[in-house]
Image (cartoon, rainbow, N blue to C red):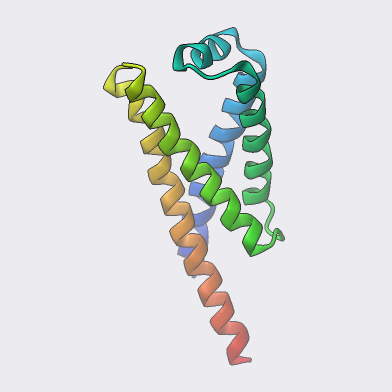
Length: 129
């Protein structure tokens, strides 16, 4: 059980910090603004995505957040990573740039798997009492 929690928190922290950092860049970096233009997205989408990433990271990091909200955050991040991959491929970016979102999708998947493991074992423990 402890090993599952360690893996969960490490993977969740990595994803959340990456999302917070990218949100910060979306709001402050000229290079990020240019990147959104390169991908064909309007500037307001960059701001919306930054806000969504901040909210999702907070939801994943707060232990008392409800399960449905966490599930929504996981789905939103997964959709964001897949969409980023597709956007980079469609824009002709090099493969090493395009696959970065998929690497974070893998870390997100690890976080989600261990989130489910922890919650299913907690649920079983509560039922046994």
